[in-house]
Image (cartoon, rainbow over all chains, first blue to last red; front, side):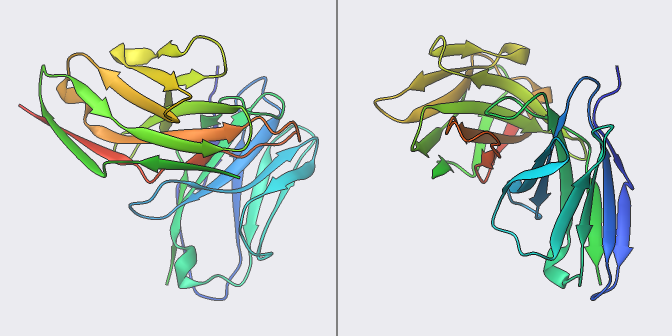
Amino acid sequence: DAGVTQSPTHLIKTRGQQVTLRCSPKSGHDTVSWYQQALGQGPQFIFQYYEEEERQRGNFPDRFSGHQFPNYSSELNVNALLLGDSALYLCASSFGTGPFEQYFGPGTRLTVT
Amino acid sequence: AQSVTQLDSHVSVSEGTPVLLRCNYSSSYSPSLFWYVQHPNKGLQLLLKYTSAATLVKGINGFEAEFKKSETSFHLTKPSAHMSDAAEYFCVVSDDSGGGADGLTFGKGTHLIIQP
């Protein structure tokens, strides 16, 4: 049973560019959440997708957007990259919405230069 | 609104001695509480969860946590530390706000160091 997978593993971008990160949820899960983890910090909630809609959003600007596909996989897009966007981006999946435990992928390390 | 405070940024114990990682939470609703562990260069792994059932929760690898509503605490303990327990530990809260989607709110983490 495959767990949560994310691609790519590492990414280097330049300020002002755009980036797309991808996530496939754990088998049987239909909800995907995205988190940003800066170095030395706890993950911060970006948004959650369920039934192909954004259901809840954390305190992140509109430069951060996402999408969920019919097969429940998801993308995170970040436009106009800033140096401060350098972080580990984590995808988590769960079944249904609500306060259920979430299963995390290994993350994508984004470096903005 | 929900928040989590992990009271220690670093905890150092000797192998074979008890571990105590402290966490206080704030929640407007009935909270669900979790502890996650993150080993270097590895993903977050769920250790245990509290979802309004038994207040003493047992998790993997010998860890357990006790939910104390009166103290708004959810401290993580283990009777005997092992070298493999060295990692970053996160206390996490999620409100059962009834609104549907719920993101997790993480604490800043406690770095657990195990001395041989």
